[in-house]
Length: 132
Image 1 (tube, rainbow, N blue to C red):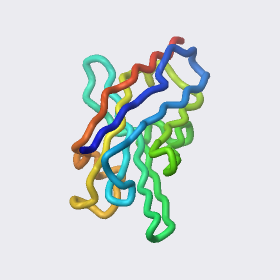
Image 2 (cartoon, one colour):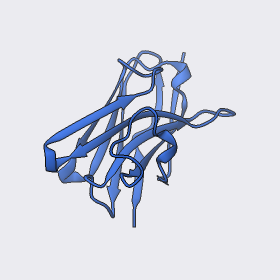
Image 3 (tube, rainbow, N blue to C red):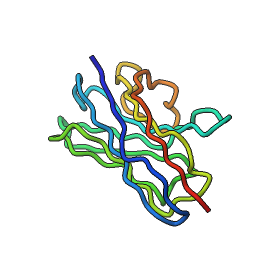
Image 4 (cartoon, rainbow, N blue to C red):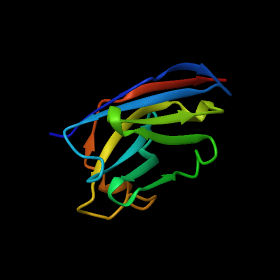
């Protein structure tokens, strides 16, 4: 059973940083891509970043939404089955509930910025609030 749990949210001021963690279980990272999404009040869910880990080919690739490029970094610790989202230079418009999600690679070889809709497994979110 695919299980995901996001943590690390909180209240920060604009310009500060936060690191979110996504604890994953029930699947192999080689078979699923991991993504971060966010949803602000009265807005649609938005793809933030995703990562493809492929130990079989010693390959890692990551993608970012335009609104976070250059400020957010996705990374992983396979031994801990955890994916991180380092968020720097946070802005008030980054305020949202952040979710981690998993996408089976049955639908696509890798996640990219065009495959946000293929993420089928979501964990509970963590709230990030950025004050101005």
